[in-house]
Image (cartoon, rainbow, N blue to C red; front, side, top):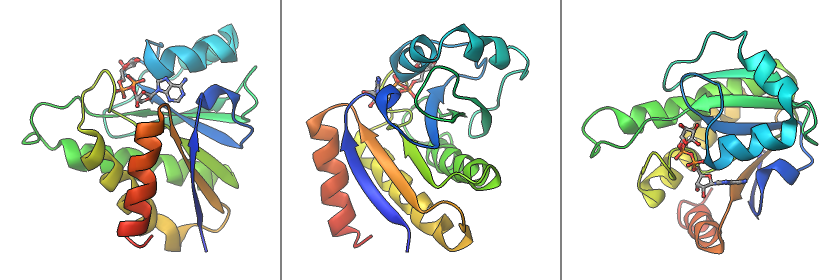
Amino acid sequence: MLQLTVWTGDITRLETDAVVNAANCTLLGGGGVDGAIHRAAGPGLLAQCRTLGGCETGKAKITGGYLLPARYVIHAVGPVWHGGEHGEAQKLHSCYVHSLQLAEQYRCRRVAFPCISTGVYRFPKEEAARIALSAVKEKEKELTFVKEVVFVCFTPQDAALYTRLLSSMRI
Ligand code: APR
C-alpha cells in the first residue's frame, strides 16, 4: 500500500531519497522551488544540469542531490497554464508519471513532490492537486521500491487543499 503524506514546509529541508524540482526546460535553475533547490544543493547541481541538454515539458530528468539532504533531485518540467485548452492537464499528469518512473528506476523509497506548475506557471491549485493525486494513484500498482509519496506544500492553505482532496477522493 503506497503511503501518501502531506507535509508543509521547504522541500529543500526534507530528508528523503528524492525531491522533485519544479524546473523549466533549460534545467538551469530559476526562482521558486527551482531557485531554492539550486541554492541549497550548491553549484554541483547546476554543473550536472548543464550536461543534461534540457528537458521537455511533461518529462523529467534525475541528478544527484549534492548538498541537499535528499539523495536525488528529479527535475520535472511542468506546463505553463494558458487557460486549460492546450494540453496542460495531460502534461502535468505526465510530470508526475515520469518522476515516479525515475524514482522507481533509482530505487527510491520516499519521493517528495512540490505543487508543480502552481506558482510562476499559474496552474490552478485545486485542479493541479487533483491531477497530482490521481497520477500517483494510477501509478501505484507499478511501484515496488517507492513506498511513500510526500506532497510538499509551501503554505497551510495548499496543505489543507491536499488533505481535503485526499479524503474526498478516498485515496
Ligand atoms: N519548498 C516547497 N515548495 C515551494 C518552495 C519550497 N522551497 N518554493 C516555492 N514552492 C511552491 C510554490 O509555492 C508553488 O506552490 O512550489 C510550487 C511551484 O511553484 P514554482 O516554484 O513557481 O514552480 P512552477 O509554478 O512550476 O514554475 C516553474 O518557475 O522557478 C521557476 O525555473 C522555474 O521556470 C520555472 C518556473
